[in-house]
Amino acid sequence: MVRDPIHKYVYLPTEISALVEDVYIQRLRRISQTSMSSTAYPSMTGTRFEHTMGTMHLAQRAWGYCWKNCDADTRRSFQSRVRDFLSDVSTGSIDARTREWLRSESSFAENFEGEVSNAVAAAALLHDVGHPPFSHALEPYYEELRTPLFNAASEFSSFMTRTALSTPRLQFHEIVGMYITSKLPRRCVQDIPWKLTLGIIMPSRDPNSAVSALKKIFSGDVDIDRLDYLQRDNHNAGTTYGSLDAERLLYSIELHVEEGEWTVGYGLRARSAVEDLLFQRNQYYRWVAFHPHAVALNTILRLALETHDTIVRAPRTALTEIKESSQTQGVADRDAGPSRFSNLDYFSGSYGGRSDRSHLAHVDDSSVYEQLRRGLSDISDWDRAGGPPIYEQRRFAALATAALDRVNNWLPIWKDEMAYEDAWKSISAGLATGLMELQERAEELRSSAGLSDTARRRLEYEIEAITVIRGDFIPAVQAMNKIAKHLMYEPRRQAVCAKERHLAKVMDGYTTFEGDLAGCFWVIAYNPARVSTAGEGVKIFRGEDSVPLETISPMVRSLVEIEDSRPHFHAFVMSTSVTSLPNYGTKLLKETAAKLFEGAYAISVVELWSSKIEKIARGA
Image (cartoon, rainbow, N blue to C red):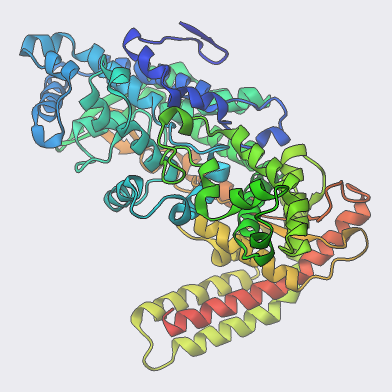
């Protein structure tokens, strides 16, 4: 038993202990659960390790109730399907533990609940093992660096290509987690039915199989992964949003088969608890995860690393010339070529010969901080080497210092919905003419001869969006969100980050920073939460019959409107100084920054949207 502030005690099965002791599970002790959220909530310093332990604990309990709530026929059918999977050599090799379990039908049935419990616990324990340093904050950074960081011919590159093709919606950390899981030493998992564990974790050819249903215990709209982190993160933040009826949810979880498809859902008695979890998740995103200060520092941390990489990638003849100098030999060698990324490679070993697991697993949050500190100490050497430009050095220094020391050298343009609405009121008049001209141009292009059907449909979509934004009845927050979506939304997070940087660069070109804001630049962040379809995949069972939750829950249907009323777009003005902005926090400085934003953003929106429409018409 392990003491835990959320669950009181977490029960660790003896069979799982060797897996918990593996270097990659222990690495999670040094990976922050909520990235840079401690900027806004100082006590929010939890790690991925405590969350995965909590998830493992809840997964065992959830499976126990799933099994308890099954009738005899469902149990027999489920056992048979799992046995078929384990016995089928085409689904993977059979490990020694599983072979012993399959030795006889009586042994299989007698040990079924306990063996499945261990497999589910192991899968839950491994569900976050692929997270990079600082978790979600740096995931787009790693994903964008797939080509330079992971050699195209490497084993991981091939693994990622195969996995992404079979399951396109997987996030980067999930694919990395699967790769790490596939490389675990046999000694860590010899007491676990490993074939079943891998069947739960890895992408399945049949997402509705009995084995795939087990993954839904901790991977769905309402699951024990969310049940743990909502309680844990809100407890650490000091908020009340994590007050959930966990016992009711666990007690009511059910395993069913409908027309040959296995699924996990909840009994009707849990409806209120399910609704509460979805609503509290919405509140958590609104007030904790996407707090303006957390959004700012998450973005600043990523930009600091990106700027550092840009600087050390830049061609510098002078650096080559001074490589013989003993004073700068280390800097020049360390920053030359893609090997610099090996400092942050935590799983692939593609560079620098770092294939030792224990060495790779030591890359954690502190490795990122060390990279930034080293960059700050290298600035004087960059100067002597004749590059990069002074402005880029100052920009990196400002970003790195803000991330390391929480210096107030940045300022949010808004912090709440009211200020967000005020920004729209100020820019809407300036946008009116530009949007009207955009709509006219899009309509003209839509009527062009030779336009493909795809391009015509895309132009119609843009015309509809512009019409809605120009209308008199769209709420201000939704108007701002809709513009941001059309400028920056992409399915992959790293592509969103690229558009954030591009918008900021365009706005920099239309802004004259002077006075207390002299030398500043824009930082942009677009963070829509994936809760607009909350409850869509949740089934509520009444006996053997199920209904989608959203069809019987007006509260869940209202979550779409609630999410649309949250600012999805954040703008910050940032100084190139490593000290706090002069007059930081004063009303005058805030008003000055807001006016600069309004002017630059209105022009940039029209320019970028116009470019997008022209590209659609060209078929680009």
